[in-house]
Length: 194
Image (tube, rainbow, N blue to C red; front, side, top):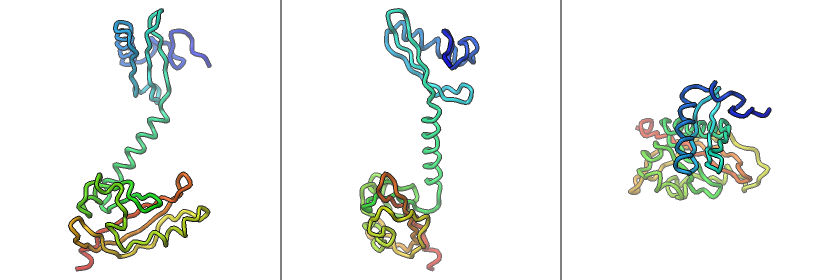
């Protein structure tokens, strides 16, 4: 369905909410006056996120509209997942198939004594020396099923400075882009050991 001239997303510009009309007018005037492209986005209109692009040309300003709802939902879902993982009481590490740490949550930093930047790129065996990813890997064979949760194993985490602390470790694996990736969940069991 083609939008008629003077309309956006099938609605006449005058029928748009005032905030969107005001933003469009402000950006239109800026693009026209400064002869530079203008862009604003993440305005909610009819349950969607739209990105408005305004480009000056010989006749004035050309406006385009992109529906970025799907892109925005993906970004919001990723932010929500990160917030959830960071609020967990357990340490969570994501690993490459090689055993290198890709990411860690805030509790992982608290348990190990390392900052996230220091953990990224480290081998998981540097902080969990008894962890054997091979028992979850099945030799890296790509036709093995994903493993939702491994059986918890009691190990020791080596904190920064070499201090060992008792932990319970669970490993899950998931194939992504043809390579096995790991999620390692580490729970402090010091209180249970006393």
